[in-house]
Image (cartoon, rainbow, N blue to C red; front, side):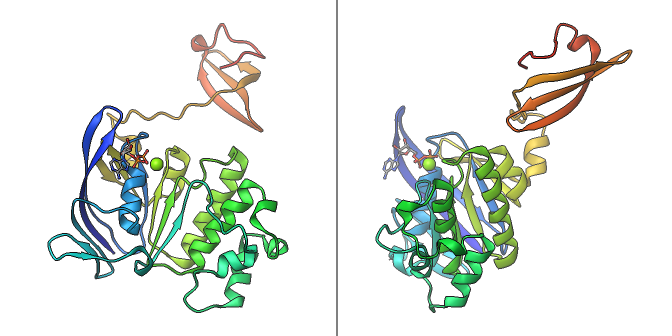
Length: 275
Ligand code: ADP
Ligand code: MG
């Protein structure tokens, strides 16, 4: 369980603002931190990991105090039991995949490393150096390294944003699998509605450093004032009309989606049109 309250003055492109977050989580929750760029999401994760210092507040994880400005407690990053996955992988270039994963383990356990490699279908790569891997493989190794530590808290900073769509989908499924199997409380920053919907127990929406909503994905995305809509782009493959409605088959990337729409909405549309 995390209990935190932190304040830090930040300097954005439009002047200074306060990161001002108060938060309590339950057990092994998966929390997705959602919000526009520049709203303080990365800074919040870095503060929790001890890589940055807030101006005031406290951070308590599983009853252990990591930071408390009043009591002058500030554990250094190496004493905070977190697994951190950055946007840009940050693997050790001179170590093999196996060594990267084993690096932070409290008790070196060869079998556990192999079990993780197997789950991620990466066994064949165990002796490879990071520079011989694709972006998706590197991010997988970074994720395995963070999980292998069995940290009290997993911090993921937009781990899928540098990957193409298919890879991101695949890795998202793996994150879900690991999360179910190892039940590590997780805070993941993401811009992506698919991440939020398929991974989050709760979503923390922040803007300009402040929490504007903290609720289940269902509540967040179905509320009346929610500005989020699912938006797809694709090409019409087929249009089948009956009296009042038409069924459109639309090709998007490598998938075909069928939607039913009122006929008068799509009167002017034909096969081959981009919608
Ligand atoms: P996000 O991850 O949501 O895009 P960041 O946490 O990276 O946002 O940054 C939010 C803003 O805070 C940025 O404008 C950044 O320049 C500023 N900022 C980041 N770290 C510091 C710091 N240590 N001191 C002051 N301002 C900072
Ligand atoms: Mg960021």
